[in-house]
Image 1 (cartoon, helix red, strand yellow):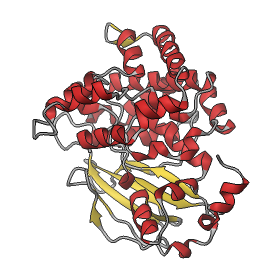
Image 2: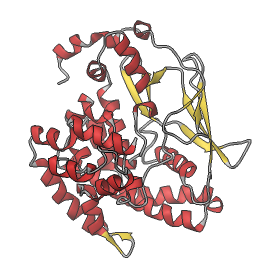
Image 3: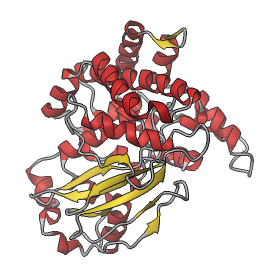
Image 4: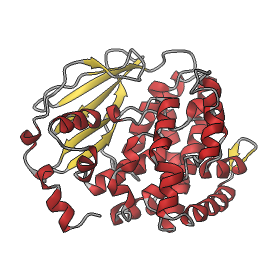
Length: 366
């Protein structure tokens, strides 16, 4: 709980950042990403960093275009930079590359780096997580549920400090998001340890409620399509255009899921459970059969992808003639939300967030 006692307990997080003695990194290749994607972490006194990435690394790749799409989403009038994401644009020097600009003046590193440095100074991850600004942490979760980035690990979360020295998580790396087949084991959201942030078990902030409920999901998707295709239509293959049509439906369904979840009073912790399969001893054994003894990993991923989730159940019942039926999806997702609401905090933790759940997802996908 965020109360007076916990604020006093974690008040070291509100001291000037020099107290954490956080170093800045030099140029390095980011882990778990394509080798051609490099980020330059510069000194916090520098204004920005730029990531260059090919728009098309293979014929049907959508990695670069995904980055551009998410950047455009944040800059739509309806969204109005609600997520404060890095700006992505086509390079002025090479129109086959994109540049992603990250404002760096108040950046103190990535979430992973912060955890490592804090632990060296005797500060636990749990303690650090209580220092995350509640609204910012919930905005991060909102974006992840909206676009389902597949590489949302600690190295792809940069941490800023606001004027009150609260820690503000900002998501980067959207090259793999909005999978065009939510049932494909290669396109599942690779959930990591941000889901146990304390802020996500708290009631949803009013600013977030107002934002998500004010969205006209149909208009937002229509406007995003128009903006995206007006700029990149000539660069997309026909197959890529087909893929993005499904991605737009996926985005639309994610927004509908969020709106219905907010209306029903779910916390972000409960919303996250809508996109995760329930892991009990039976499902764990089903997924891992043979893997722990040195068996093939890819069949385990297929078995994991066959486990039902609330979102995919609603999605599979709502795709009619390759298009999303909005009314059917809303009807189905409401039923899934009610099932989540029936779970106690203990059951929610047991089925979706205990250590073995994290380790299984990490082992299969990261």
